[in-house]
Length: 274
Image (cartoon, rainbow, N blue to C red; front, side):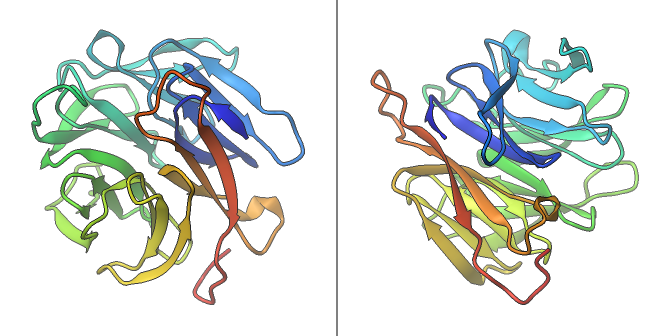
């Protein structure tokens, strides 16, 4: 798919790849051999994920920051008010299996604002919000490990992937470095079934697959900035997943949209792929 203004936040859900187009204020879903479908529209749109019951969650920077929820009739309703935790910089969201979600804020108005450390909040199933991590250097993509025990946050300015143990109540334990990414600024991230992690890098126009500790296992190259990536799951009926990457030319606005969704055959491994 092309013609995307500013694609971000790809998520594999119910046999389709969903992503948000920040520039167009739309959430799209795509399946092989079908026309793309507009799933939701709102003027202020950031990242997306799904509750366990399948309802879509959207991060909106409007009114200081909100999480919106798409109801079965297609209406968007307020799920959580984020504005008391931070007024600017709301970015990525990842939901767990208990009806909770984590949302991060970079902490400042990018790109014009002066840098300030970012944070992560926990939104519980009833919509209450509390800060669970602070002091992050441009927190960007987030992912929960396949066993549900660990939250990993990509610190783009920190050139690292930072991990937190997840407690039973959703609180986060002490931070530790999951992997350093020297020279790279990880953006969107996703785990594979083996527990390795893919991250996208805008400036270096690639996605890398790492083990915890930083060993690079694989890479795929893009011809434009790679903003985020997701893996198709085994509900495709295929032994080999696809690595789906959203990317565009960074900073070249005003002309035809440069955003694309690209599917790569994920490199083959013998270590736990679906």
